[in-house]
Length: 247
Image (tube, rainbow, N blue to C red; front, top):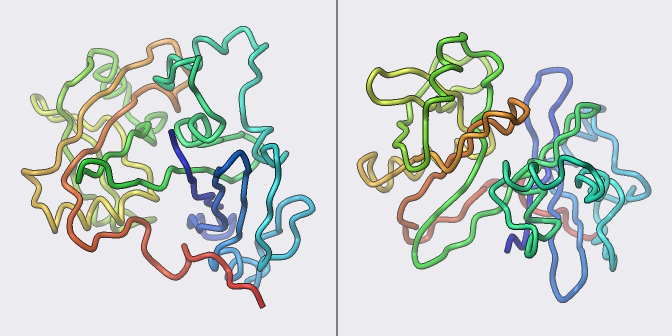
């Protein structure tokens, strides 16, 4: 079960993604805190705090999921709900709100927020499950290749150092023939690159979890990144990820 997710916000001016908050669940309570990234974005005049949570240095607590995040869950009454959980590779009986948000990204077409799980060390391993990004921008023959992938097929990481938006970008490609099938989510690439250096490329494995032929394109290709957890490694390091200290 996912215990904590980071909320990232896309600056509409330069399209950069900034961590603005952390949402967690513990002892039947939901908690939310802004990160230093929210402070920086607000001071630049672009970021607006969520709903009634106006104080960036306050820790918010609630018995139920905060409305702005609850609205990102698909209602169980929707006819596609069962298919939706299947696309996410989640079981209907034990899925939690944070599990759903972490896997789906909590994406709505009307705004610029996304959510990602904060990885936790399990059996000395680092493992992240994510949907391939950018598929809608691929050539038709590459999208066709995705449809022929199957569970456990190996994928390979390819650095895109001349990417105009992110020099750390990592493309996902097949083996033979080599064809791009999307990109790793932007907010994992800093850690992924770090783990590639620390563990070596041969000790990092990326594979297909499932291909959803009938899903919206953002849920088309579900992947898994797995490697050893190095000593002293901390995911999502950086001052902008740290929660705002109370005054």
